[in-house]
Length: 611
Image 1 (spheres, rainbow, N blue to C red):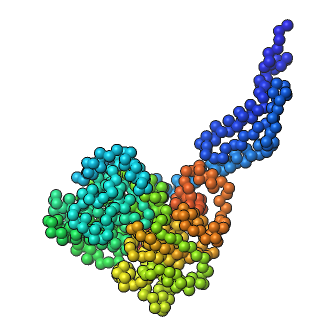
Image 2 (tube, one colour; image 1 turned 90 degrees about the vertical axis):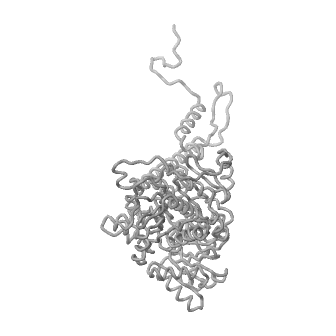
């Protein structure tokens, strides 16, 4: 009589081979781990030792947790993981819906499928000893200076201006301004741009970004003028776009300093002409400069487009394009204007973008306009300047203007006060004048000449206090400011970073005092709290214990792991996710307004910088 097979019953029915309970439990845990492989950084499933019989029950081990408890923990973990994956998928869908899928290129280039693969060639080369450095040596220098780079064949960082082969008059000008050695963004950014490479530069406010893109433009224009002198009506060789009039005027002044230093050096350098094209000034004066021929143009998009449509300017020979505060220019307000401007470029050009706050989504979109771009980061995009001491004070709405006087005596002048609304600017200006404070104010409702005069009086020290809306927060350089006061918290954390960045510039230290109260949105308060923690600043007790009034759900931290983005992937705020982003909500409202026929130019907020 044949013996029965151990894997079959006597009646011939097939059955599974018996596996001990402990092995089945381990197999189930292994299977769960394999399913969660992309999320391996998550808390791991708790392993438990279960009862098992050895050799028919001769030995056993006690469980630390019951099977029911282990099962409940696994269910809870699976629930967290599934919510994290769901949140990540929803955020990716939202981000894709709000990100423009049309490349940032001219219509003609897209229509003909023109794709540039080579960068502009320049005559500048780094010193041989620097070019011969190994990648490991360059990496050590960048690590010491906290510089992060992305891209292929990155030029070596140069830690002295003399190594960058700048003309002697420029070296003397830098020395006279107290600029003895380059800052980190200049150490890597200047060699990149002088080499002709496209670049995205991200560094905190007051880090010297303007010099990085202005100096190579002057050197490029000088080389072109020496090669073939400019004739009347020709030009420009280079173009700088700015989102605001005050920022454009400041950049224009710096370029004029550089060109005048060259022309007055007595070393045979030819004079270079720069045109400032901004709204609020006479077009006839600007046309007169253009007719004589210009080497460089600094402009806001609206006024530049006007002259392009009138055919007063030709970009046929323009081979250098810089967008300062590029995230603001590429944002929904000026994106179409930039496309119109790019339609007038004919030949290959060098394109560089700079900003202190540029989320990864904007960077990825901007790269569609660049060729073999190099990305240079000094610190996290959107991070606050570490040289600024941030003080956050809870002040009720009715006590703000009284407490303002107490804050003004913390530091000597000059002091810069920011407000959200034009009416608050005017009210504070009048109050301070009554109190005998030498103050001036600017906002988008004032005449351009009045605004420029106010900024000039403040910079010269004639006035002690400047009250302004956010038109003074983007890029304006006030080297002597020791104190910035935020009379109210801005609606976006990006504006807060730009505001406090008006102090602590060029390696100096400064103080930023911010008034908050219950009228501030929970989202911006959470962003502010996380920004203070990141900058290792003191978090006040009322903000430390602040609980969000928004229901983000239990999977927020897990979603950050799933998406690889800390905070909001759209605006860069650290205290919320994209689903609760106030900026994304505002953009959606603007899109709806444009779709119903509203003017996008009127939606750009205060400042009037576009035209």
